[in-house]
Length: 232
Image (cartoon, rainbow, N blue to C red; front, side):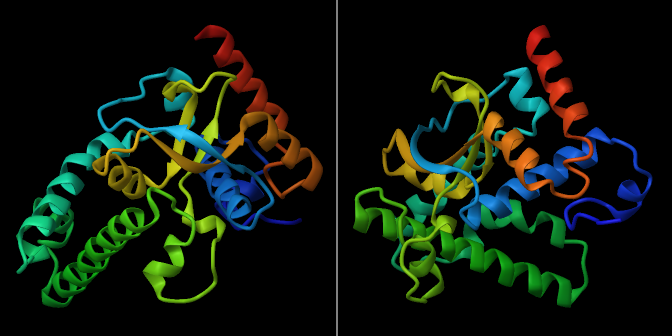
């Protein structure tokens, strides 16, 4: 029996469909194949830092609305960075929020937490500097952050799943890229280049490549999606 790296082995071994495991694994499968170029295409997608997607289908497929949840923190971080030549990441609301899970850890855990938040903070600042330099183009930002010279790559762009035919915000599930979206919104952009993959393309990809676990339960999953669409 072949197993997927994206789903719990015991769930797969049961030969049973589990919606939560299927969806979580599917999001990982999509992300991996978008990044390697097997799925998705770069398109302009609207962003709005205040918009909360309450579309039942989007929420059912894992929309977290992380952009509006994070925007205020990133807005204030960049505002403080612009205003203070002696910018201290530990004095930002962004640091205070992200450090909360580390507060109860020992001294080593707290140190590691501070280092991880420092890395994330300066990643946000580098995204900000890159978008200022390019006029809002994400292409090449991963190389700028890491310091390598690999050029434009799929990892530069936020990823989203498109659910329907229209381009309304509630027709997209933001798979990753909330920080990049927030920085773009801070700079005044209302559309950004994103890697977009449709539900139909995902279903066709599973039928064609037959990935372990996903192919075996694809009919159950996509039939469930169709029924929910009909209700909502």
